[in-house]
Structure formats: structure tokens, C-alpha cells
Image (cartoon, rainbow, N blue to C red; front, side, top):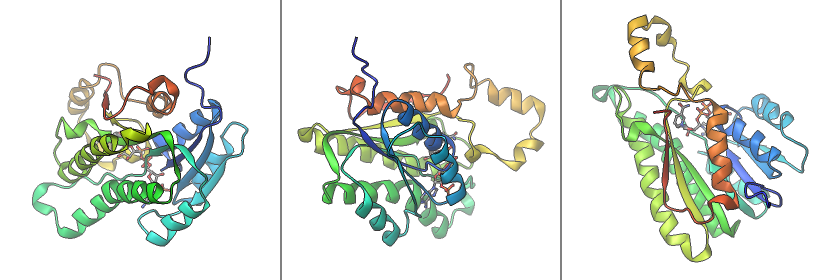
Length: 245
Ligand SMILES: NC(=O)c1ccc[n+]([C@@H]2O[C@H](COP(=O)([O-])OP(=O)(O)OC[C@H]3O[C@@H](n4cnc5c(N)ncnc54)[C@H](OP(=O)(O)O)[C@@H]3O)[C@@H](O)[C@H]2O)c1
């Protein structure tokens, strides 16, 4: 039987590859035979990801992708791509009454403008091959709000809407666009000092929302592999909910 999930001969760009889900995705993609281009801001952590990749002609590029020059420099070096996984993102809880313009700018510049600008530039520079797969990370918080999550959920809801339109516009080239709407995944992103102070009862209640347990980066990486592979070649414009619910 052909391995539908192989990424042999596929070149994949993964943003946010210096940590958490992006790091695990890079490792799994390389293990599935893909050639990966990994990017992130933190050089030592990006190097660590690089050291964990399966053998192959992989590349790493340190870049703050909210800085146009750094994004352009990455794009200039990239080959033509069979897939892009947009994992770069931030979460900064803030109750609505404290939201100021600077917070809106920061959240949206990383979580929404970065993937939107990167995608547009990659398309204009003809770096995206026909039948490529473009994947965006969203959150179940767009569906299940939590206190302090207005900006984060808003930025990801906007990204979900963008991804669906992208799928529509690129269907003629067989290029697919999809979103992963993940629940809580155990990555550096969710380390919250106040959690230590969480009452045992409150913590228990919170964890009840996850009868399958909190997600691990490898749980999400498995779904990323599916979306990058030919196993999902008939799937576009969707959002996969993976919340351990
Ligand atoms: N963890 C969760 O519970 C969860 C749930 C649902 C969705 N998600 C989404 O999944 C994605 C990955 O999350 P994660 O948990 O793996 O987060 P993480 O461990 O904090 O990793 C975030 C990554 O984004 C990169 N990044 C942030 N700002 C950047 C910028 N301006 N330019 C370039 N790279 C930038 C970071 O790079 P450096 O560290 O090198 O600066 C890091 O590699 C995010 O979009 C997140 O919103 C996460």
C-alpha cells in the first residue's frame, strides 16, 4: 500500500518552529520524509529544533516576521513550497476594560497580520506550488470564550475567516487552506505563573473540560502531518476542532 501520509519530495515552511507545536511539527514533518525550512526569533531554540530533525537538506532562518525586512529576507531564500504551517503566535490574556490600542496592534500584528502578509508575499513571489497545503493555527477559544481572551480569540477568529477565503481564491490551483482549532496544548505558551496559585478545586474544574486530557504538541503535529500530506488532498476551507473534548 502507498503511504498516503508520506511527505517525500515535499518542502515545507514552518513558522514558530523554535518552540511548542511548530517545533514538534518540524520534527514530525522531517521524520515523514519532508524537507523543512524552520523559522523563529530565538536562535538557540531554533538550533535545538534543527538538531532534532531527521536527516535531510533542512534549513533554518532566524527572523522576527513582524519586521518586513526580515520577512522579505526569509522569502528571498526560500525555494518553491509544497506547504506552509503558520505556528508563530502569541497569547497575552487581558480583561477587556484594560485593552488599549497598543495591545490590539501587538496581538493582531503577530497572530493575524504576520500570517496574512507572509501568505500574500509568498503567493506574489510564486513560492507556493500548485496543490500546496497552507495551514493556520487557531484556537477553540474562538468558540468557547475565556476571561481575558478577547484579543487572542479575536485575532484567531479573523485568521479562520481569512483561511476560508484563501481556500476559495486558490482552489483553481489546487492549493488548499485549512485551520487547526486546538484546545489547550502543553507548550511554553501556556505557562502561566498565576496557575501555581490556582486553587486545586478550580484546577480540577478546568481540567474537566478536557476528558481526553490536555493536548501535547505531538497530538497537534499528527494533524499537521495529515493536512500537509496527500491524505487530505480533498480537504480545503475547513477548521478541524481538536480540543480533547
Ligand atoms: N499552546 C496552546 O494551548 C495553543 C492552543 C491553540 C492554538 N495555539 C496556537 O498554536 C501556535 C503555536 O503555539 P505554541 O503553543 O507552540 O506557542 P509557543 O511555544 O509560545 O511558540 C510560539 C512560536 O511563535 C514564534 N513567534 C512569536 N512571535 C513571533 C514573531 N514576531 N516572528 C516570528 N516568530 C514569532 C515564537 O518564536 P520565538 O520563541 O523564537 O520568539 C515561537 O516559535 C500559536 O499560533 C498559538 O496561538 C496554541
